[in-house]
Image 1 (cartoon, rainbow, N blue to C red):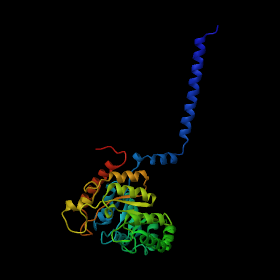
Image 2 (cartoon, helix red, strand yellow; image 1 turned 30 degrees about the horizontal axis):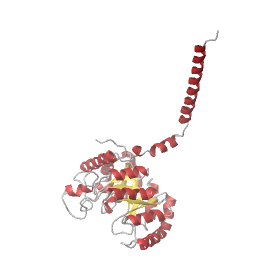
Image 3 (cartoon, rainbow, N blue to C red; image 1 turned 45 degrees about the vertical axis):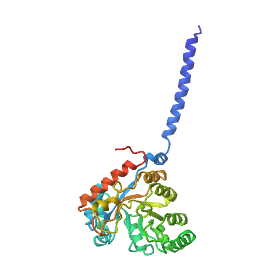
Image 4 (cartoon, rainbow, N blue to C red; image 1 turned 90 degrees about the horizontal axis):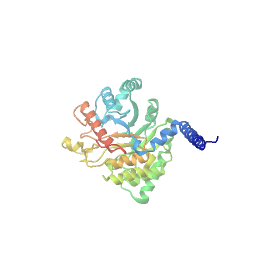
Length: 326
């Protein structure tokens, strides 16, 4: 005998089975998505973005390399930025130790050589330094630009164009070695203003020419700095977590000097980190300041320097997109 209730139950079961099959297929398809694609999608979510930290050796003054590397590892950084005299002398220490012993020290402390800062050589004398960097697995050298200062408008564009053209033979060596030449927007320099940075980003003939962005040397306006980060985008290879505070060009009480550090001076880093998250910034982030005089550590002991870098990093974590307030 035909039972309408039984028929309804069968139809309902069939519909549930169809829905379950569709859900299973959708789930299976999701599992088949490339892990690289999944990570890329995750990276595009601003609240998932995190800085890649590197420590500048000059923060420790002229401390011995084994001490600097041991302390840098405690900050949570994965790499060291070697500075030469007068700010530090760890680049000279590398030469004294030799490349093999230096590489062994890096392995011992679980760090990479992420950057060499080389202002003394300038942008046109870095060929040998780039080859050394390649041997040590280092992919970045920072220095300043070179050319006339204080230009604006078409004169500035023309000067940046000439500078980039002059750099091309050196960028060929950068291509050969896999090293990126990152120019800091240092004061009293061709590459110092927001417009000069934008021209450099637009005119660079290769991704091996990039920008080391230093907020210290720019107007201390969070929103303007954030807009500049968005405008420069992938041209940024190193971001200095560094504000002007009370400056660094004269002797002053330590509490005033430390206002250069994130979380101490008045600059709000949250808009800057939000902009870095929006562009999915993958370069180095270096918590930084200059002491006065140059060559001394920012604080009296290596442990105190490390604690200050960690404090600044904790502050930056509260500024990171999606981070919860402490």
